[in-house]
Length: 239
Image: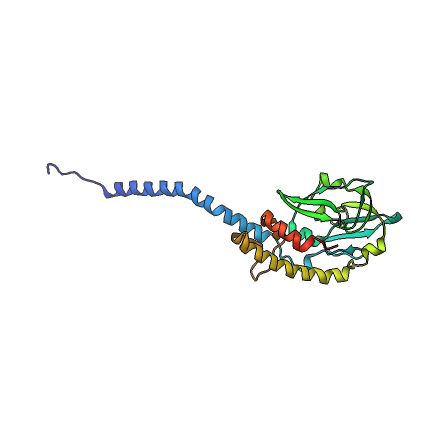
């Protein structure tokens, strides 16, 4: 018949299939990009354990202070001071900026260092008075040792105390430090919940596990304003 043309419907369907396949090829990378932050956050949350009293290292033979520092007496009247494990489990890996040099004298409560993590800061005060006799240079080369070995290789300063008995009379031995740490974790949970609603509500799923338990390093996900609040509530004027 004149004017009649034959069209194979399978040919047209083939074109439609090709268009759909091309569309999927284009959209898949965008879909992956949009979902990647969620997967990263989920992987981050799953990689961390719950921050509970059971994970904290609180060895015997140390004096623990409520500003999250410790001290213990070494030979020849030399005391070492450092950050306790609870603070490090709250912050995660950090860098430490020392403000004191050997030969300097400090009083209990004086500023001696600053914790830094990506531009967020915490000020650290001395738990005892005395003369600085040494600074742990290892921390500059390998700041991760603070978190790995806070009571051994992670010490910050060595000092010759002015009045050891007086300065440590309000410190906590290991057994009492354990009870105090449980109380601090309870306070911390309330603090983090308040900070999340105030600063970072979108982070609640990676800072709090199912059931409301904190994950390790909760402060690391919060902004600098929360670090300032934390310092005022948990570190300042606690020695």
